[in-house]
Structures are given as structure tokens and as C-alpha cells.
Length: 77
Image (tube, rainbow, N blue to C red; front, side):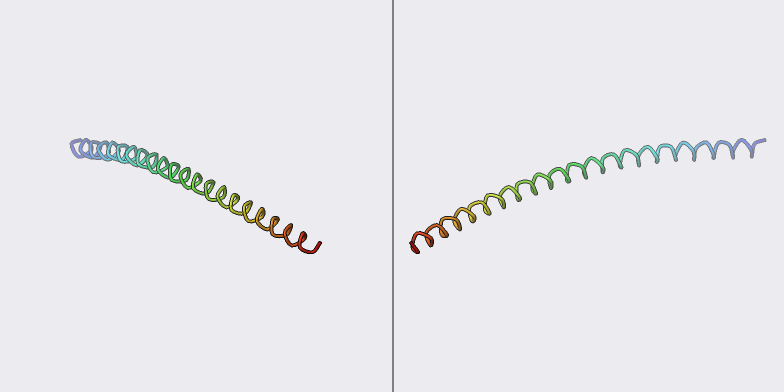
């Protein structure tokens, strides 16, 4: 019976160790997922800022082109 008891004890220790390792892995994954979510959100804000700046620049260029076109039309008349 002693060998069986020792084997049962070994199995129990390994099962407990595995549960603890699984819990550590779950905690690590949650932390990693949170980090990735923060990183994605920061990148999203950067892209929004980039495209807003791009839109302002295009609007300014369009305004300048409209002004130049109007100047050319006035010269023709």
C-alpha cells in the first residue's frame, strides 16, 4: 500500500502544481491582453490624429488651388 500512497501523493502534487501553473499562465495572458489592448488604443489615437492632420492639409491645399484658379480666371477676363 505504501507505493500506492506515494504514487497518489505524487499525482496530487503534480496536479496542484499544474493548477498553479495554469493560473499563473491565465494571469499572464490577461496582463498581455490588457497590454495589447492599450497598445492598440494608443495606435488608434495616433492614426486618428494623423488622418485629421492629413485632412486639414488637403483642405488647405484645396483652398489654395481654388484661390489660384480664381486668380487665373480673373486674369483671363
